[in-house]
Length: 403
Image 1 (spheres, rainbow, N blue to C red):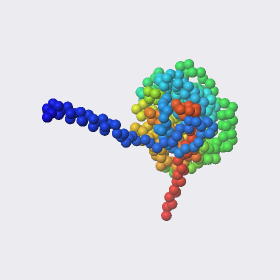
Image 2 (cartoon, rainbow, N blue to C red; image 1 turned 180 degrees about the vertical axis):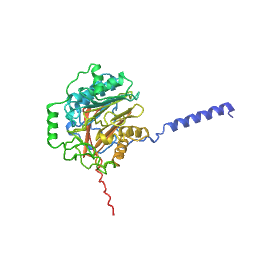
Image 3 (cartoon, rainbow, N blue to C red; image 1 turned 90 degrees about the horizontal axis):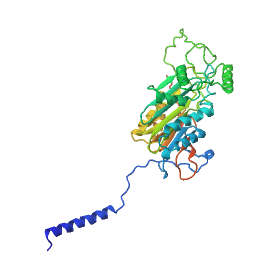
Image 4 (cartoon, rainbow, N blue to C red; image 1 turned 90 degrees about the vertical axis):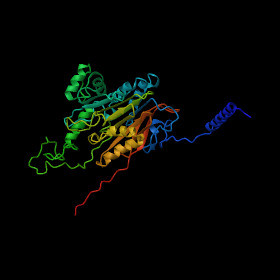
């Protein structure tokens, strides 16, 4: 008969064998994988197919980071940012440089005449610039709005970020600030922008952005004043059904996000605003939460489109916070766009979002489809490629009839 000590060792040995047997049985995975669409890594830039809004990258075997993404098909800006990001392994320490210099490349190239000098003249024929850069680690922001005579708007925004305790400088004072740091002043008007402005004047300043003023802004250049004899002048404004052409040749704000392998994130924007805007108008581009938003703990988002409408909803902030609560980038961007559609059925805009892992998506409304540019590691094909998504279907506004 075995002693107590011998029986004890036999029992322990048996339990060890059972444990090894159990551990060798494959367990069913419980990891949740979002529905995604493929990365078009092997498709030439000119032939990218169109997809619905999906989470790109979640099913990609290659590393997702580092990466750069920007609104619209500004491939040269993205490629430039991607080269800068890859100056160090994994893009470490380069995300700010990549975003600032990528957006600045668009300012130099006058991307679609919607970024940098020579585009989007206001009612006085002048071009002014808005730009912003946000650090996802510190949550610090540098921005300029209504910047005059300085074409390097995103670089001036960087100086605001790095050398002041402010978040935004505006107008002529922002120009003086830039010049004090060595930026050279120049006219932001060009022959093309002057010609565009003169043609607009010749069409009685149509379209414009006035409402409830005298003389009738739909038939006159003004100057517009409040018609105090109008009994309805102080009533709540009704939405103007006139559709302004938001998109190519009008308002292609570049929004850019860069993430390195350590998940350091920067987001930035640059634009010359809305064509024929009322002087002094500033849209969403320069405002954190509206034009762009970044948080290293979650990810980042950037928007483009009708800035007067979009800035009322802070879509970039909404998208980032939605991802914080567990939504995918596709779910987060659509949530933010749908919130705008609820109130403005005729607006046009797009919103891109990236989580800290490098999975990304874009939602859009008001157009048939929307293209954007992504650079990231891929197994084959170009690192920089154009993605195109279908926009959300147009919502028909119901007109109530009073009996």
